[in-house]
Image 1 (cartoon, one colour):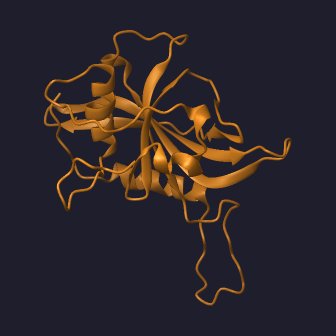
Image 2 (cartoon, helix red, strand yellow):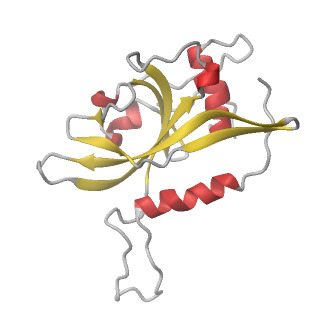
Length: 197
């Protein structure tokens, strides 16, 4: 699914704060002042990451979709599952009066399990955004929770650091997991952004 309602030259590239404050919050509690939401709903079990092209919103080699999840439930598909990396990152809104946690970002890596008990780690990375409890009417672990997901395929080697002696340039290739860890520091150094509530 492509972006069709944007003027020429514009692209869909929301920050973490925008995904939570505008898109996810508007999904849970519709906002009359913000009605642009082309992100589709998608069930985790219905699509493998390489099948998202016609089902999720695509922009800049990333796929976006809403889904409903339960806490501590595996995000499984027919041929694999999304494994959580247990490295939750708070989404912080910075304003003149201080900082406020508006959500949480969780990281997942997709594993193929067609040859059980063997598991094959892929290069597919998913960031799953949750709204802070302060924005929710109530929290019940038995109920489904809306989340917004951003998925991309890393170009790096999923098996780990590749130190191939045949490479003339001598560069070290990072794994998909290394790329996630390194991105955490980059997110913390972003410029201060101010959004209305």
